[in-house]
Amino acid sequence: MKARDAIDVLARHRGEAVAVCALGMAANEWWAATKSEDSFYMHGAMGFAASFALGLALSLPQVPVWLINADGSLCMNLGCLLTEASQAASNLKHFVVANGVYQTVGGLPMVNDGRTDYAAMARAAGFPRARTIEALDELERQLPAIAAEDGPSLTVLRVEPETGFLRTPPMTYEGPEMKYRFGRALERRFGIEVFGPQGY
Amino acid sequence: MDVTARIHEQLTKCGVRIAASLPDDWVAPLIERIAADNQIRHVRVAREAEAIAICSGAFFGGVRSVALMGATGLLTCTGELATLNLRHQIPVFLIVSQRGSIDDHRIYQEVQGRRTLPLLEAYDFPYHIVDRPEEVGAIPDAFEACRMQKRPFVLFLTRRLVKGEGAA
Image (cartoon, rainbow over all chains, first blue to last red; front, side, top):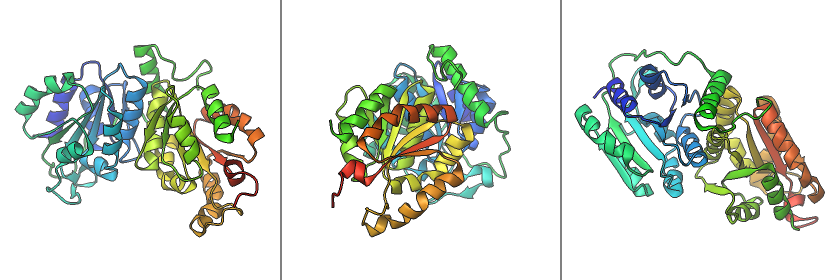
């Protein structure tokens, strides 16, 4: 399964979900597939997209929040699995695009290459539902049920590392503009106040 | 009213609805007091940067939040404060013990005492030090300053404030 194809399937089944993407390959592929402004694309804090998504999910408990994480980012702070499990946010779905390499820096292998079972780790942390999907047709078949189930759940998407540098371009805006586009998109969709009457 | 009750009251006045924390012994009583408040969702984290990112996500949900930690924990998350909050101009309000002060006779806090404030100044992160119970009323102003300045804002609690005058 290729990362782009897996992300395309997620994007088609996204429904009303707001997405939070870990920086790098996950963010770039989600942008390529959705061009969505009601998604937050991390540009830093590698390892903490899961925590950002948890804070968002706890703040908007009626809104499905999908975390598009990657194995490199997850491994930066595996403790996030304990925090997610403890908070039991039923609106939070955690997807891990796992290619076993640091794709955007040239595909260098990750630590413990090929031996880590992230779904088992999530179950051990207390996630009620966690699984690994390795084939595109399997992902197509399972995703409607995954989207409909109560969170927190963790779904590992085992994808092939790409040969050579994956040059999917990043989103075309960044920094403060991303803050305002994302925040304003959520204000419009959910009638909430993110910025206040004076714009901050 | 003891000082933790006063701080809790001010956070409620700020509209805080989520608190994410990892304790040191100076802020532990405040954390447990907040944890007992069913109007505030309390999130215990495994690493302080998680608290930073949780509060950042909550900002976009329109929910006011606070991150609580010790000074050593603050030092561990300066990278995330820079690459998430400074980069995107996302406000995050932190309440942190001001460890390593001259009345903190713990050798493992000594470097934090000397280098934390210069580090925050290097990043251009504003801070405010609360040293006396009567100064706790400044919290709503500090919270608003954090939102206006769109960056991390650290409210330090001194040893005298949390442990009392002359405590060993």
